Length: 197
Image (cartoon, rainbow, N blue to C red; front, side):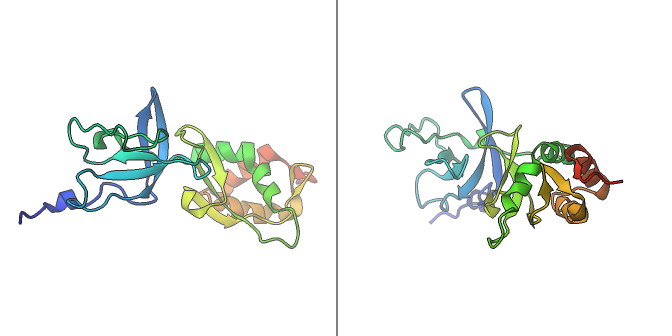
């Protein structure tokens, strides 16, 4: 029996990896949720890639698709296949992108922990469904890119950060890779209540 080269047996991506692919003229991003079986188990190897956990489907990504293979009838209409070379690692957002997102949406994140006697949520920043250029936040660990800290409890008043919660919010912002200066810049944009003197 012929031996399979080690580079053929190692999958290019792992579960949890973020990948980019072209579809309908757009660059879309998804997360690998299932690796292909080892070579020889099936004639074709596929990665299952999810655009968004709220979507009722996943894209099937071919990872060693034979030339001329036609998937007609083998997939549901909501699934697509791409050749391995069409699947690339996603570039994670830089700190400037994360800061911009938090300046715009920190209040929405903090509003997730205003009700007493409920478990305090943890939050991560991630890609918006299918889009490499837009960020959002998630409470699902496996979907997160950066973060994971518990949202400070009752840290808002009139959509401003309570001055008494300022340090707690700065510590929370550090979980997204922000420095103290970055966090202060975010808070300056969002505002404090009452204003810090």
